[in-house]
Image (cartoon, rainbow, N blue to C red; front, side, top):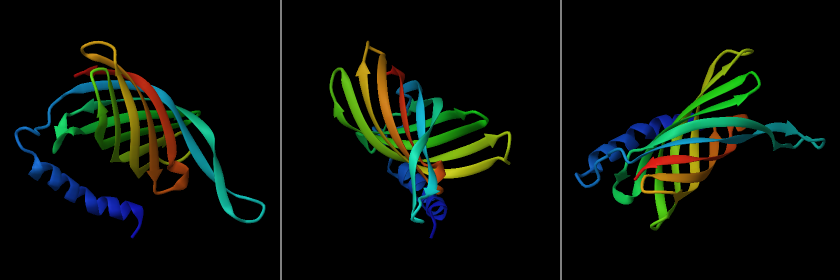
Length: 180
């Protein structure tokens, strides 16, 4: 069973669990909006002189995007967060959408830290090749620092694991979050 087949099989199950287990206290709501910019390090697979496959993170691409914090699900520390990114490198443009669950493992008056997981879809557009769509598993790790009652800055590192090694990447971004 390949990666794409597994994601397609588990997507309806995840959606049903989210919808069935929500109570009034866990109802999804709007809690924040974030905008971000950064860079994406991708890896190109190569074969070394001994014939072994390998590679290195040799491509840096600019990214910009945003997310919506839809509030807590199941517990007050677990949030549903849809988002979108644009990745640009010369003639390549990648539009990606994601649906992630962030678990806030540290919360205080002025700082929050989270880790999460989710699924993403990458829509490739280039001037040279036909458009292509890919599925990915996203693993974000982030930190938020409150600047005022409704404004925070944040930093995030996201590991993007795709079904093709050349589509996987480390994504680093910083930005601002407006909301609770």
